[in-house]
Image (cartoon, rainbow, N blue to C red; front, side, top):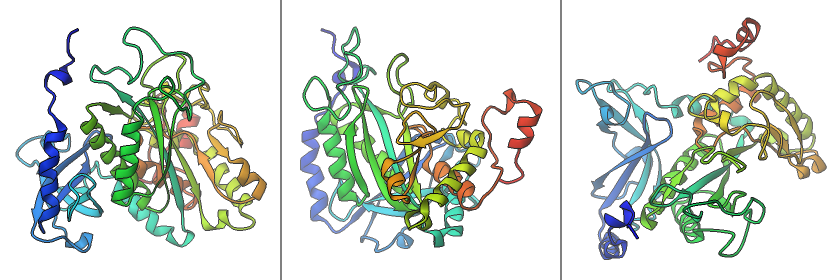
Length: 392
């Protein structure tokens, strides 16, 4: 049997354990700076040593990196991109005093980089902080083996049809639960508000939930939880993909369902507030589709087909307890006449800054037009006019 590329070049992670333990015995703080690269999907990181552990994110220095190697600078003559720390978390890999540091990207002049979607999102969240917006995001993902095939699938075939895998138990129903449990524990150690996990409908696919989180912390924590997931997968010698439709055919895709509420929605009489917000989303459907995946809707075209627990990308609908809709009102919310709603449209590889920012702009700031719009080149003149934007 021919060994896989990963087996050929594999290292022994147990050897590194003896060195990792050394970090717990020193007072120095290794800070791993983490940021979103020019793809809008992938994360990068680099590390630096500080003589003592910072007490707050404000004590962390601004750093820089070569943007020409991350899709964030066009050439080498002005390729410095600055890293501004915005959130820090205990490092579940190095332990001790070490930290994971989430960063915004800035140009060499100190302005928000064009790929920095956090800056705009933070501004939006500050405008509505009195309404106490809560988010909970359900991150679905798919595991791949060393050959790029879905983990646990037969090498020259397919597993049995979907049905027994969702929330399944047993070796023929779920795969790589040890990776899932390791990620769960690492997130808890890091202070991520991870609230649950479960096996998904397609074998080899899992989901974890983060939240409820207030305002900008939702997207911050989801990005860092993704970084932790990738790092855990490294240790296990597998890959993780957030592709919203990792395999064609009669298999579920992967989303990042986004639950949303405000204090008014959670209080008595909140159901009317929820319905009003959903109506605003309906009126801005095509714009939101453009914000819900990094390719402005093109990734979600493969997923939002009206099949496999999705609504069609071309039509907005909502309903109580239904998973064949754009927006689901949970049954308990309908019973209580208050609570939250779930936007089921965001893709698994979405930028949570773009998603949460768009929801707040439409539902709370009541912006009728957003700057992006899905499928503009295919729209009629009337549709283009209704979707055009004068805001950024």
